[in-house]
Length: 105
Image 1 (tube, rainbow, N blue to C red):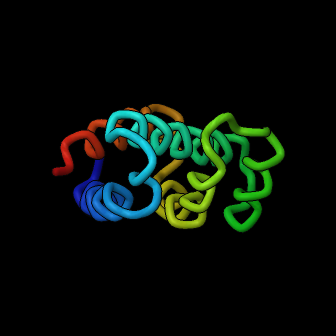
Image 2 (cartoon, rainbow, N blue to C red):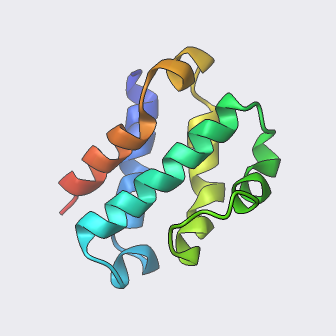
Image 3 (spheres, helix red, strand yellow):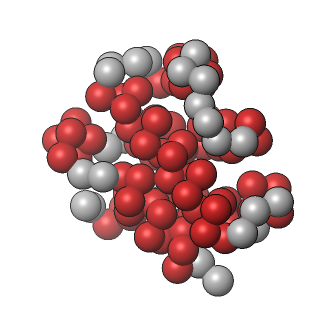
């Protein structure tokens, strides 16, 4: 994965490791929910959902994560949508996200 997107990912993962998303849950739970959101955004990209329509498209699937994690969708979507389709098709962005999230202090 190119360095710039990975740096952006690290910034986003750091952002989500401390705010409201992390307050009610253990770090492992929070990172798991965050990775589920990333997977949903990645799937929306695979399905060729327009970036601006991603929050609604994901909401329409009735995700099982706590509702406050859906607030991260507009922040995660630009990172996912800037990736080349070859990365979207062939890489597990949720696993990369979860790994980075768990490494945050």
